[in-house]
Amino acid sequence: MKKRILFVFSLVLMGLFVSASNIDGKWKGTVPSMDGGEIELTYIFKVDGDKLTGTISSEMGEIPISEGKVNGDEFEYTLDIQGMVMKTKGKVNGDEITLTTSSDWGDMESVIKRVKE
Image (cartoon, rainbow, N blue to C red; front, side, top):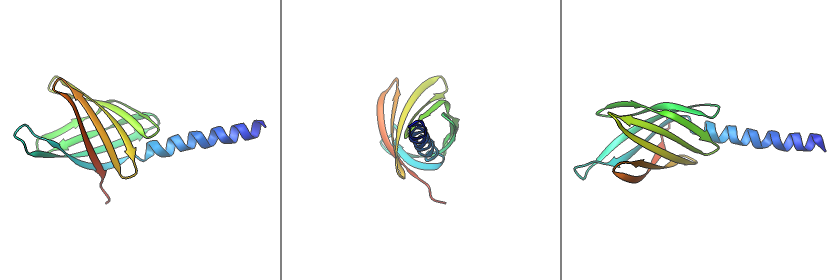
């Protein structure tokens, strides 16, 4: 009985690790700009255990991710853009991630897709 419980527990832990590692890599998407157009963003995510690091870049530059955490196929991180703090929560679904970003301007949802290289 103890071996079965240990086996099931091991499978659950491996499932969480596999889901978290699916975030690793390069992703791309767009967000609305102030002038009504769109800005293309490139996301580089790196997972180490339950910690998420990486960067988000556009033609205007690169911003590091801070306070990143991963829990299965969900994650969150914070961006500090010249004193404006933006908190983002994401959910991985295969080669797509749905992001919800909260800031002083309100909430914004977007979808980014894995870059296959």
